[in-house]
Image 1 (cartoon, one colour):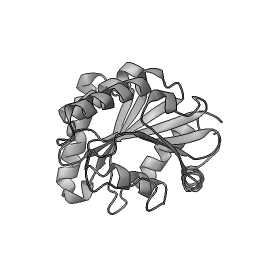
Image 2 (cartoon, one colour):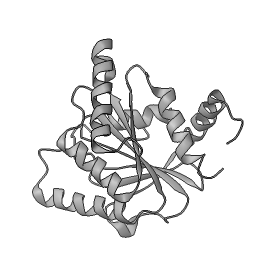
Image 3 (cartoon, one colour):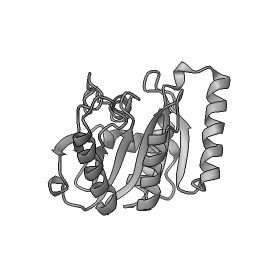
Length: 215
């Protein structure tokens, strides 16, 4: 929106995200809500703090449930912000104790979501800043690229790194994205759901995706 300052954008998106409410959990594509308006999906390996990031961004302590058993929840959870906007919590990936049959169903469900969801305008990919761009993270970025959807990487748990390590990690990820040819559609930032660092930058990205598209 023309003439809107960063502070106003942050305040607007923060107020809107605070209104987020659980809509439904889908275990099959036929259970997805109507494919209209705009939605942002959150993806990440199990145990990287994806749920904590969602809860921090929405200023709600338990909107996204933090499972004590990573990989247990194998459904896509939809949260309504308003009549036109949604957040989507994708199942965590990289789980080691889930049977192959469940993993196959996960791939089928995720494939159906990425291939057909026209309202998807961006994917927030949460990674552990200490171990970014794992093989499965790269597969997720490939899905985004193939679907023509922009991605924003949150290097979560950045508070566990020193300042020089943070800078080096960010630079390394940026170099990798450049080598992949993804710099136009995928960007990256440092983030910490523990001490809230990077929160305003993430809010601005969400504002751009959800509110810049409809206004």
